[in-house]
Length: 141
Image (tube, rainbow, N blue to C red):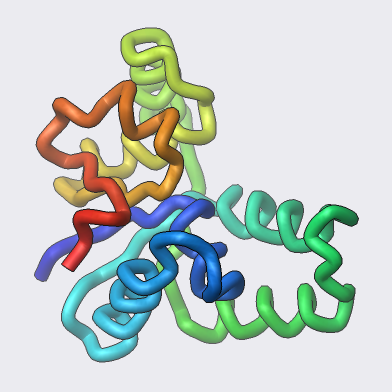
């Protein structure tokens, strides 16, 4: 079964369903819940998502932030904590492709576990689109 590593930009579209590319993101969620794909996220993704939801500019109330994070956790998406080897790989990716360490961690997971990094972050995607294990959210079917 295909392994997808969705980043926070993709998962947030499960919450902000009126944003661009929310349809393919919601399709990924459905595929996961139906057992058609496996997902894996780095542990810090939960912090990234919580951070975005709690930003004043989103206008997202604390009660909805709690509910959204709780719903996400109940989905049972496997979470990967990084040890030295995986973090070292992410650091190499950062220097090679000039990505943030956060984006490099998603890419390192995809590389190590033979998965696909699915992103809605156009800037990051353009830096690594030549890699076979990187997928733009707009291309997800």
